[in-house]
Image (cartoon, rainbow, N blue to C red):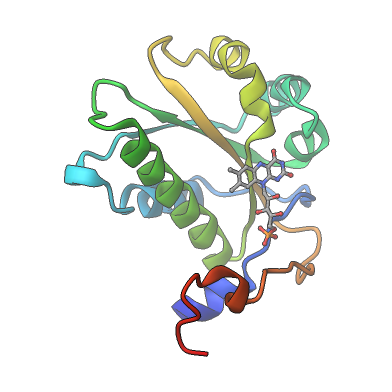
Length: 169
Ligand SMILES: Cc1cc2nc3c(=O)[nH]c(=O)nc-3n(C[C@H](O)[C@H](O)[C@H](O)COP(=O)(O)O)c2cc1C
């Protein structure tokens, strides 16, 4: 898939089929995440992959988006490792780039994914459930699977609303 086409056609996918996701596909997605840029190339992201069906059902209880997690085949908990961090804002921005790389990679190989943030309201309980070390900072959960449907609508503001100096108008 061409890069810009991938960026513009990616959508958050919240319903998945029962079809399994291959371990190799998940590793490709993790690798794409790991190739995100980071300040000082410090790569502060750490991943925990949840592919056990029972554990996914348990995880689903920790968010109002439980149905998404229950429908997904795999969830990736994305954490920041404080021992690798050097600047909170820059490091969390790097984690955002990492998550976006994973969403785009999933889309590029025909999977669907959604970035879940609401679950962070229960971050400590989720870490306990998944056995994530206390010192890690849970930053996002990405739910993945094969899309039950494609081509959902999404909207963005006009560039003219976003460009403060009217560049290019
Ligand atoms: C930081 C962040 C947190 C998000 N949290 C959630 C969430 O908890 N639940 C959810 O269904 N979608 C969540 N999303 C996905 C957004 O709702 C989605 O990206 C946005 O509505 C635009 O839709 P699109 O991705 O299909 O273009 C989150 C996205 C980001 C970047």
